[in-house]
Length: 403
Ligand code: PMT
Image (cartoon, rainbow, N blue to C red; front, side):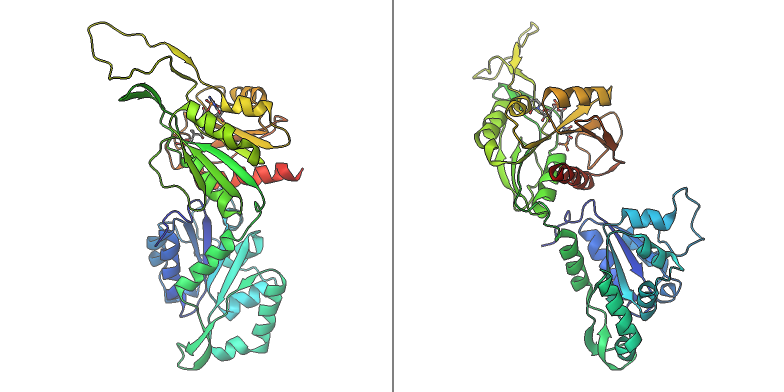
């Protein structure tokens, strides 16, 4: 089954160098896109002799980078911004030339400069004539790359494009994508941690067919649960009613009202060393829920409301050495409101959403957040997929854990 969200929020730079196996890179891009990745393709001058940039641009639905100086001028330095943005770089095919350049510190085009400027992992997928591949200098360069932490896939054996038989065939696209998957998710940095996450809205019923609620879709909380689980944590997700698929490997407790959510969290909170509260919990509920549907009459009606329990506030009182992260969706005074909630509820960090911004807050796939910490220091994240936001939040939590 193809998980179309697996790579949501992941940025992959795909380098294509000049070899006949460049056609395989087209299928790699297509497969990565189907898994939800954002793919930026960089082609060397020789790669363009094998496949047109238009093909990669059409499949990746992004502009293809083909040279150092012929791009539209942008204020950011392109190879640095691509290198910074990339979660992983994959070079398909990796010719003897690009392997040799990186092994010897030569950065003379967009692909080599990007690889050299990147902090993320780079996977080289070599493909070349068997005599070239077994050439002592190429092998020495491969060894140098491995010693410097670069990842190399083994080419397979078979009849090569030149008609010779031997080692040098590029692995199949499906194998390349499997390798990317393995590398992206191998980080088990949350192993041993138990994380409780609240997500989604709550419903406060007036009668059997009417309730008070809010537009939370659960996307932010589910993205956090998915990220935490993929990074090795045991995750329990206490979720209000949503219509999105639960992430695999996560324990789900479905709840309806704020009171249900409070009871579910209080039942098991002591098992968790990290608690992330992104649910949009109703602060009030009707004093009484009618047993039967309220009939329409001529007069206006008043609904008396009472306060719901505040899960975050109660957890804050018994916090101990745990990390508790909250969230707030604000329409004004983002920083002040976030700081007040952080202090009042004893959070270590708060995820502040300015929900007046397009692409932020409720229901959207993306979010724009300010992460505010106890000491008042904050970090603004640019608009990105909620999966990417989740990754940054988890990174911040791990940093706090390390202190
Ligand atoms: O679900 P999505 O569509 O992806 O949208 C995500 C989101 C916008 C809902 C999410 O990012 C977010 O901002 N959640 C917090 C919503 C909010 O405004 O919370 P609040 O300011 O009412 O509460 C502050 C904190 O206390 C939150 O961590 C909340 O979960 C918690 N709280 C609030 C009330 C209550 N009774 N119990 C609580 O635990």
